[in-house]
Structures are given as C-alpha cells and as structure tokens.
Length: 377
View 1 (cartoon, one colour):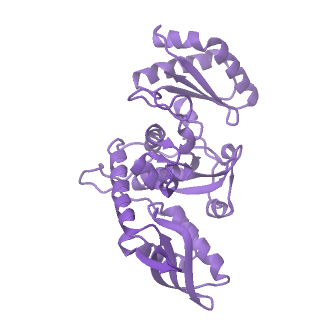
View 2 (cartoon, rainbow, N blue to C red):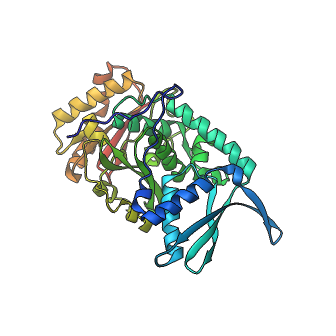
View 3 (spheres, rainbow, N blue to C red):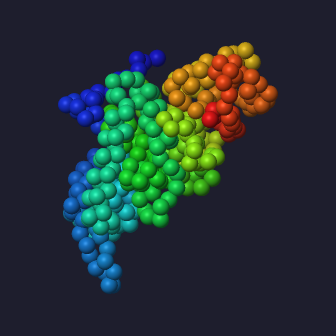
C-alpha cells in the first residue's frame, strides 16, 4: 500500500502556492487536439472578452476564439471531443453555455464562438465564486492525507449547500454552489472538483444516468481512482431542512464517498463521453472508501463487532459535532441483518454510547449500497 500523499500546497490565504492538479481529460487527447484545447482554454478563460451580438433583433453574448485545427477525420466529432475534455477539466468556465458555432475551411477549424451570459453578470459571479472557494479553503488544511481533504470538502458541500434551483441557470454550475449556496448535481460536482483540483488532487466531473440525468466526480486519492457523488452526500433534503442539521453540526451521507466502479454501477451508468475519458482508469481500489477507512465496513453481520463500532462511532460523532454515523455491509444478507438489529437495538446502543441522554434517532437505509446512516438530532 503506498504512503498516503500530502498535497504539495501552501496554506490557503498564506504565502504558499496551491498547486493546481493536472487536467486529466486533456491528457486523453491527441497532441494536435491538446494544442487546440490549450488555445481554446486561453481564449475562453477571460469573461472580459465577452461581446454582445444582435441576431434577428435578439441580443446574445459570446466569446470568439481564432484557432487553427486540422481534423484527421470528422471535424465536428473531434471538436466535440476537445470541448468535452475542456468542460470536464474546467468547471470554472461556468459562464459559457453549451451552445456554440464555428467556422472552418474544409476540414480545418478557424474560429469558435461560444455563447455566454452577459459580461457584467459573468464578472460578478467570478468574484463570488473565487470568494466562495477561498472560504472553503480556509476550513481545510492542505497539509494532510488526501483522503481527509476529500472527506472534509465532501462534508462542507453537503452541509452548506442546499439542493435546488432558483429559476436561473446558475443552479447548474459552480456559480450556484459558491455564490448562492443553492444548486443541483452539476453545481455540487463541479464545486467539489474545483476544490480538489486547487489542492493538487486530480479530479474531473463525469455525467450519466442515475434514474435521470446526473453528474458525479472521478478523483484520484492517494494514487488510486474512485468515484464520489457529493450531491448524494446531502441529507438536508430529508426532514425539516430549516432545523437540520443542528447549528455547527455535520449531517452527511457517506454512501457515495470514494466508490469503486462496481459500487457505482449498482445505480448509475456513464454517458459516452465520460466512458471515453475514464476508459484507461482503474476504479477497483477500496482502501480509501469511507467505510473502509473509518472502520465501518463489515463483510458479515457479527453483532458484537457491529455494536462495538456503532458505540464508538456515536461517541466520536457527539464529541466532534457530527449528526450522522454510517455503516456498510458487503452483502444483502448482512445488510438485512443490520437493519433488523438497528430496528430492535438502536435506542439501547445509543443511550449506552451517549451516557444516557436522549435525542431523536432516525436511520436512513441505502439498500442499493448496503449502507445505513444513523442520524442523531
């Protein structure tokens, strides 16, 4: 097992430099595609370049980039691959829409026009996003195991951001996450990616189906690749969102923190672009899965071992202001036994672990992942 990696970063807000992670999807492009990618990134990265244009009496906003790219086969298909890599690597380009047009001479790209929001809104949101990222960084030290960094950012997003929409497109990007604390899966995943990338952790957002269109994150922790879904770490959508969690307490589901491909395949599938960019990666490691790292993973249900873990986890959660305790079983049989045990013994175990004081206990079963989260509020 390799030594857990410390991120090569200085303290947020200090004199050190936070090393941004390598853009992984770029590395999957051909050399000529990488040149075009770099040129487009340089041209699209400045909201000050947004221009207004009027078409058929309607004002639109765009950024134009002159670029020279000779396609080897189908220009449209190759351009889509380059742009897919660019957007998967760079969610900070949130002000760009997915609509674009381009000019070409035969099979050679000469200009790309990306449609955007207006310049004033883009610049305002850019400032809010940057401030939001700095605020999160102030809460997480870079001088620790990459697993701990990833876990803490996962917890912060799940605790501070509400899932939902505000009637604008901002909820579908990092702008919603960092500027409004309100977003859907795109915002959660892309915000998580940016926070990890800024601490030298390679990560990119993938898309697919989870009972509907969805996004989550592929990330390299301590030299191994995992999937995480910070959107589904959010438990504030359960119960009364106004009163949960308690002030200062963390209330999180860890069922989707550092999963293997097989674990993710239980309830979601990747789209074609995401399959392409993850094809060379190995998502089989379990060492930094949340339940394995925290001691809450059990191959079989053994009451004494499970009870010992739950008591210790409850005591630790109370001491560290966390509302939830998670546990995972390897099989459906063991999971069913755990559910039965919790139903019959949870109140007793809690009172023994907590020293007798009472609270409202709720447990959230995750049958697809054989996980259970106990909430104490």
